[in-house]
Image (cartoon, rainbow, N blue to C red; front, side, top):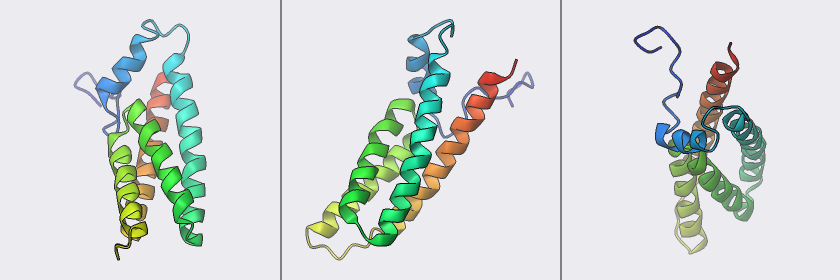
Length: 133
């Protein structure tokens, strides 16, 4: 809540500057661009998180790295920077492991999944505030 008692328009996990750039594409909101982009993002995020968790459990490092890369890029574009950074960390750890390092990416993957769930909650909260009259 802000000082006026209204819900905060941008949950903490989302960068306001990135969201402002999206809003600039539809300044009056007549086309519902922000809502459509964020709905598409959160649906994709939830699908990718499910795949990532399953592939990590199976030990498919290549697929986990590819999924982390997708999350890094898409999350940065909508301002979910903690998630983007967590995805970049997974990519780094998996590259190090494939280069012969004894690094274990499981902690980074767990953080990525946690950040992903947090980003989904933030986006869903923002979407709920957009849909309120």
